[in-house]
Length: 434
Ligand code: PA5
Image (spheres, helix red, strand yellow):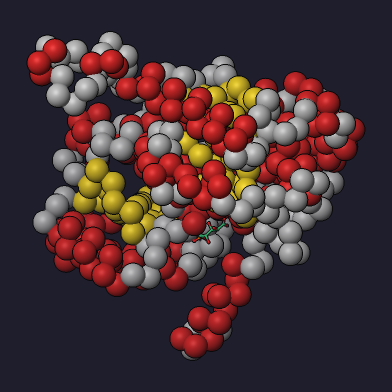
């Protein structure tokens, strides 16, 4: 299994304090396993890696292959929230910021906002490309993706004809209800199912993520295998041996006892930009209820050390950091040595070191600066690499953690009633027929 190492040495907590929650965590875990906790009809994510059927993975891979063979250049992925962030996170996590030829198909994301400018620009962008559409919506009624789908569908139909268009439209939605399901059935689009018991923000390891991943060329079988091993490792009710649950307790203690209102998830890899966004949604929507929860915030270092660094170091003491570093980067490069008279940038002192080594030194230096000088508690999570398996593991790690963390707060981690408030206001003003 791809290891995920967690270290609390700089967290201002000691392991004994964390482990004093062993009975409480065991109790929550055992109830959760027996489906006795609030929201237990949405616990399907726990068993996803075991339940995903190989035939379904083969089907996704076969369709992706056909799209490649047909010369489809771009996949337009339409979705928002849990039907968007995990997809984007997984692709960048494995391929990096600028993947080049390794990426088998370009992806553009739409329906993730109501910005008319962004929408028109993306419509123009694909106008002269050979594109396919994957529309993703569990409820099938979300306005942002529905508007985008209407427009992109029309563009595709105008380009290739209504009959041909249906071979290039894929709908990922609920098995039995929703406008998108009805539309897909009527039009004869190929469908992928989001299981009933898996909420949006927990759905990245369903076809929501897996089909686009297959299209860009990720190895979805390896990803599921990584998630399965992690799920086995992080489903122990023994807090002493379960790092995902230890993380949940540590953040709970820093919040409820040390009174920090903000957790900042930090990564030193550009490729994690959208993973941080996925994590924010996971924790914000799961925990932000009944006037409770840490505000999940994020930063990319060293980039943000040149903006947020100052306030983290010396500003008000509102946050603790959880920092992700990667043992083995996807690529690395050495600093070259120049002849003495060419060492005009005075970097010869670094010659022979790799950029990843220097990134690690920046991490160590920042850890000391923030935790020892700035008194900002730090939790350190080290992951192995950029692989699909590691992505699958880390998803399971945080999903397990958020469940326990939410139940420690005594809220239901699996609903999102607050998200509905803006929607119903908007629909009222738009006079949506009931
Ligand atoms: O986590 C969630 O449930 C939400 O963020 C949803 O994913 C988001 O609102 C999109 O919903 P849907 O997939 O139904 O269009």
